[in-house]
Image 1 (cartoon, one colour):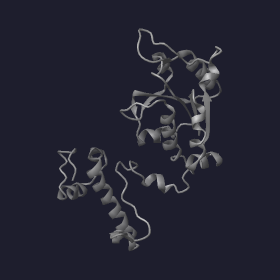
Image 2 (image 1 turned 60 degrees about the vertical axis):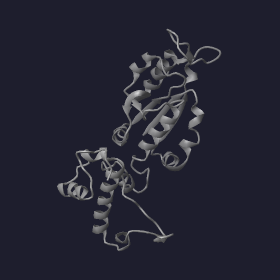
Image 3 (image 1 turned 180 degrees about the vertical axis):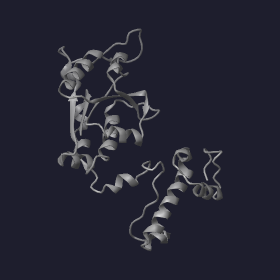
Image 4 (image 1 turned 90 degrees about the horizontal axis):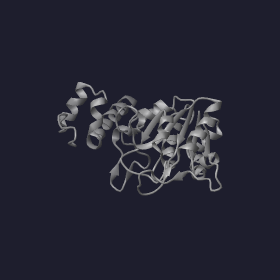
Length: 248
């Protein structure tokens, strides 16, 4: 897979895209990552990428010409899914990460200042929001999306089961996990995890995922495919499905 970013601060990607899982995926040829400098598509002595806002307003707005010219050139060689980041975009989640991981090429356009001239969004295949808050620039958002997508690429994690067991992969939060020592400061690892019975371990993990989700993210339960018995177990613990915002 090839992931490219287009921003005025391409140097921000140097270390994050060279370390840990992403770095290993790049070395293994699983991921090809390139950070483009938007200023390469400007034509004045100051490499200007922003200008004043028509109608007035605080701050500067990113110009339309450099973005259009950059995408014109970058898309000449092969097609790509073009992504913009905006508070009005579709909320990013695990399902979207899985969809993007099926693409062969992504180009993420990172804004700055007061955002983009509205006309640039005509070039977007998808607009994404990471949440209801404002970042200084889209570079951090692009790093988050790259990380979430990269770990889904075959071979990126080494252990393919890792990505399947993580939170949200089944619609539920991930079950609690432990390592040595089995007892620390009075806190003990659940006995079922020490017994070696894999069927009981899987049953315990499923139950714990459901309970943890009910406690922390009850809004996820409706779409998690729980059985009648599992709903009954939650009800016995005090969870009322008619009040999904109420924690057990």
